[in-house]
Amino acid sequence: MKQGVYVRFTFILLIVGFMVAVQYNTVQKPESRDTRDIWEIRQELSAEKQLHSELLSDIREVNETITKYENLQSESPAQALNETLETLREKAGLTIVTGPGLELVIEPSLEGIALGETISGISPDLLVRLLNEINRFNGHDVSIDGKRIIHSSPIRDINGQTTVNSLNVRTPPFKIRIGTETMEDAEKLYNHLQSSMIADDFFIDNLTLTIEEPKDQISIPAYDQPIENNYLKNTSKGD
Image 1 (cartoon, rainbow, N blue to C red):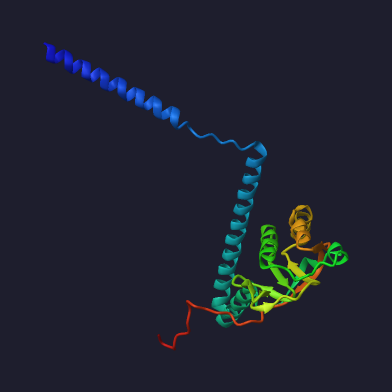
Image 2 (tube, rainbow, N blue to C red):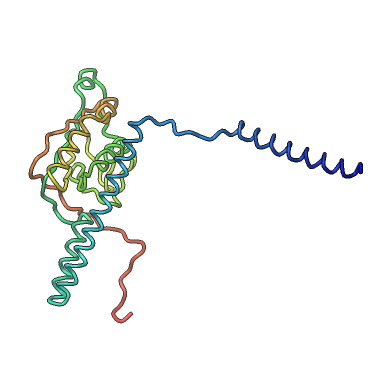
C-alpha cells in the first residue's frame, strides 16, 4: 500500500518538476520579437521586390537568347555563334559601350587647398564604397580614370598608390563614367548619389565628388587588359 502511494507521489513530483522547468525556460528565453518599424520592413520588401524583378529580367533575357540562337542555328549556325560571342564580349566589358549614363568628377577640395593640405589621392576603400553605391542602382558599366571595371577588376593599394586593373589611378582631378541601360536608370542613380552620404566620405579625405546630370549618350571604354582564367583551358580538336 505504502509503495503505491510512493509511486503516485513520485509521479506527481515529476509532472510538477517538468512544468516548472518549462515555465523557467520560457521566462529565461522569451520568444524574440521583430522590433523593426513599418518603414524598415517596407524598405526590405522593396529591396526584395527589386531583386525579384532583376531575376525575372535576367531569366527573360536568357530565354530570348536561347530562342534567338535556336532560330538562327537552323539557318546559319556561324551567325548564331558570332552573335552569341559578341553578346558575351559586351557583358564581359570587352567592347566600348555607348548609351545613357552620367559622369562623376573627383577633385581636390577647395578647403584642403586653402589650408595647404596635401592631396595624396583617392584610397582604395573609398573607391570600393563608391562602386557599391553605384552597383546598388543599376550602374552596369563603369570606368575609373579611363580604366574599365569588370567582374574581376582589382582595386588595391600597391606601394602607396591606388590602382585599378593594376594601373595607377592618378591624383585627382579625374572622372568616373557610369553607363546605364535606360535614361530612367541614370536619373535614379543620379538622385540616389545626390541624397547619399558618399560625398561626405570624400570631403573627409579632402576631396570633392561632383555628380553631373545624366546624359543621353556617354561612352565607356572597353577593358584592355589580359583576362586571367584559372579554371578554363583550350582543348585540342577531338578531345
